[in-house]
Image (tube, rainbow, N blue to C red; front, side, top):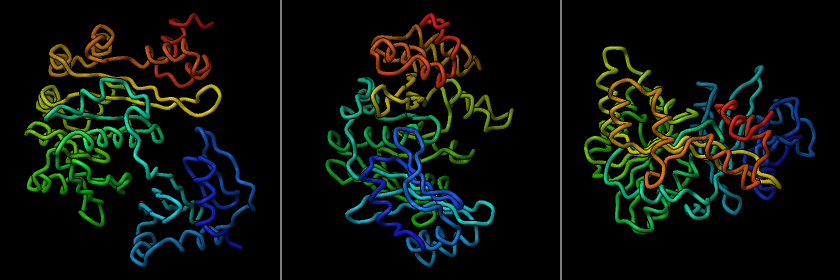
Length: 354
């Protein structure tokens, strides 16, 4: 007998979990502080999951899922919460992943965000990227940045997402939230027409392809502040990822566009925190004359040394520096610092770990 999906999602929220997974031949699983835990419920069959999941869909969504075998959508359950859902198939059975989206948008101060974030969002134009693996808090960081702008500036903010996650209430700003599939055909076309919607700020949920990246760079060059995300683990890696999307003969021009429009890259991950919870580890690169030259001259590999030099007012910090700082504050374990580091040997040297 299928479980009441709405009651299950209510329970997930009340347990403080970030995700719910429904996969056949397993109990429902929830993710708390980054770790999956089985819920004390019966093992689910494919039929159970289909009954539970289809109860949340419109006819149009059912048709789309049956045609494409994949479905991404946002779900608002009054009195329970807001969720990002993904339906897929595994060994012929339907499966689902639900991500809890907080209805209360956090302030930057609530996140203990670095002070440089409040300076970055004051920029009138340029490209700010928040990157990291899935579940690293990219959407939350961006939502907090836009929330800060909403409290302090009078701007028109256009967001293009798949699906829309955080819904901002208009305070000083006016938000136009656009969801691909229902409000627009896709990211690239939405960005093309956004230019005619008099935006001050544009948020791109994910810079997935060449057309979207090109449109984002053009928007940033032509007087708009553009926020975007990529699934990359470091600031230099983010720049290389963007350049590599383009063919060899295009890369010189793209390097020039990045060098003039890039404001900052925040490459973030979440680590288990001692005593429970998780703590953000943001590597921060802010562009300056030296870094712009390195990008233009195809010397991205030298950017990290510039980040180590350019501390102080710039707010720059490498991932290793943040990990060492968190260790000194006794917020994380040495084992987790090394396990999650993109340069574990460097972390070991810094902390004399044998």
